[in-house]
Length: 235
Image 1: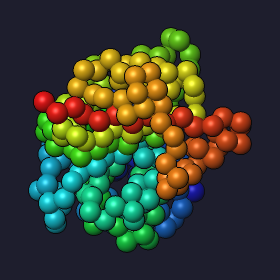
Image 2: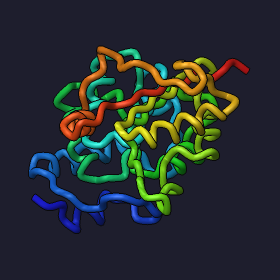
Image 3: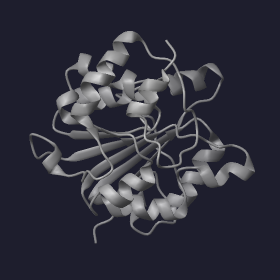
């Protein structure tokens, strides 16, 4: 069913500007889980993202833009030693992710933020507190006049690096070569970060990594994904 205005009014964040999709479809079961689960694991704009959010003090790993939650579920299953924070502003994606996370039995180690990544990192994440961040297939904004809307910008790269602990990681994926080069050039220039693929380089696909919806869609279109990994240097 189409996402109702009632659900949008109740669960969408309205006071921060975002780009991209606003509406979509969810099932009745997903709507039920949205009502039941988001109040338990959703974060408001005053929440501080640290160990106090979780039952156990474990490394915190964030996925920015988790889409329908498939990769977040993978992280929850494969890394039981991590606490996870998913950041996603698209409400139908949040509803689908909640269903998948509960079914997988990992929801207790996950918290969800529906706020823009810039706000989350600036206002809610203390410096050096994240063990790692995943950014999978961010919106490429291919038109030149829209490039300023791309997630990875010079200031954002510095902010992101500052929130990672020394030795922590940033892992990115895209099937758009021009965006891959854009992100690489910006992140290579950030002095706090080291490119694991070497200066100007990329990394090989992790064999254990699941094929996400966007990666499969790119393959169907003849576009192979490109991967990057960075580590925060020791101070």
